[in-house]
Image (tube, rainbow, N blue to C red; front, side, top):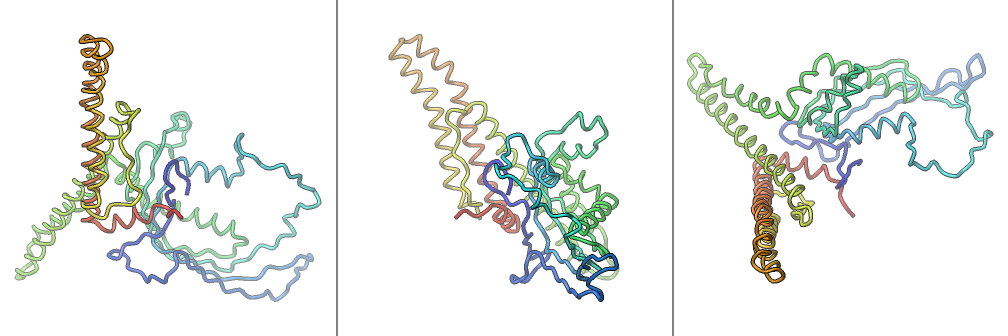
Amino acid sequence: AISNDDPIKLMGEWVNELEHPRDDSDGMIMLQIVTQHPTLRVSADGKLMSDESRATLELLPLRCYLNQKALRFIRNFFAGNIGPDEDIGDGVIDDNDEIDDDELINIFFNTFKVRPCKLKVDYLPEKMDMESLRDGNYTEILNLCPLEDMIINLAAVENHDLCGWGSVFSELAGKWLEDICSTQAHKFFTRAAPVQLLSTLGDGVADLALVIIVPEDNASAYLKNVVGGTTSFASKVAIEAISTSAKLTKFAANQLTTKALATSPLPSRPRNVPRNAGDTAGHAYKSLVRGLREANHNICVIPYREYQQSGASGAARGAIRGIPLGVVAPIAGASEALSYTLLGIRNQLRPDKRKEEENAYVAKD
C-alpha cells in the first residue's frame, strides 16, 4: 500500500457474486508449473542448462486503486532510481561477492499461458506535467481527470521459449498493453470523472430502449421487457444521483473546512465503511454539532468577549468578523452529514460497492 492517509490496497480481489461468483477457497493468484530436466545438463560450451517448464497462470478478477504518486514510486523503484533522501546503507560491497550474470541459471519456459482476467480500476491523478505533454508524452492526458470503475479485460496470452521471469512479465505486459490500446482505449474516456455519470446512465437508457421492442405474438416477453428495462433504468438513475450527491457534498464540506474551519476542522470519518443509513447517524450528528458549535463560538462567544474587553464597538467588530464563519460552519457540517448519510444509503442499495470499499482498506492490528 502506498498512500498519504489511511493505507489502501493498491490491488486486491474483486468480490462480486453477481458478475463472477467464486469459490471461497480459490486463491487470488493460481500458478501451475510442470518442470522437467533437460536431456543434457551441460551445454556444448560448458554451461549448466536450466530446467524446462510449462506454466499456466490464472488470476481472479482484481480490484485496483491506483494513484499517480504510487505509480511514480513503482516506476522509480524498478528502474533503480534512488532519491536524494534515500539511505542506501553504510555497508561496503566486496567485488569478490558480486555474481556474474553468466553464473545465474534462469528458468526456461517452453510455454507460459495466462488465462483471461478482468480488472476494475480507480485512478486518482495529482497533477499533469504540461512540459512532458508538449514534448509528446500523451500519456499525461490520463492525469487530467480521475478514472472511476473502469473495467479492463485482459486477454488470454500464450508465450513460447522464454528464459527468466523478467522476459515472461515483459512479454506479458507488452501484449496486454497492445490489446488494451487497440480494443479498449475508449474506456479511458468514458470512465473519466466528467463523463462517467453519462456513461453509466447510458447503460440504463440502453435497457430502457428494450421496452420499445415489441415481440411478435408474445405479450409476456414484452411485459418482461417493460418491467426489466424500466426497473434497471430507474435503479441506475437513483443510485447515480445518490452517489453524485454524496461526492458533491463531500467536496463542498472539504472546501469549506479547508478555507473557513482550518483551526477547528470537522471530525474525520470513521474508518469502518457504513453498511446502511443507520451506521451514519453518529458521524452525521458529530458533524452537525461541530458546525453549530463553531457558529455559536464565532457569532456569540467572540463578540461577548470583545464586549467585555472593548465595549459595544468591540462587540460589533467581533460580530462582523464572526458572521461569515458563523454562516459557513453549519453549512460545512450539514454538507458532511448529508454526504456521509447518502454514502450509507448507497451502500445499503449497492452492497457490492460497500464490499469493494471494505476490502480496499488495509486492516489494522
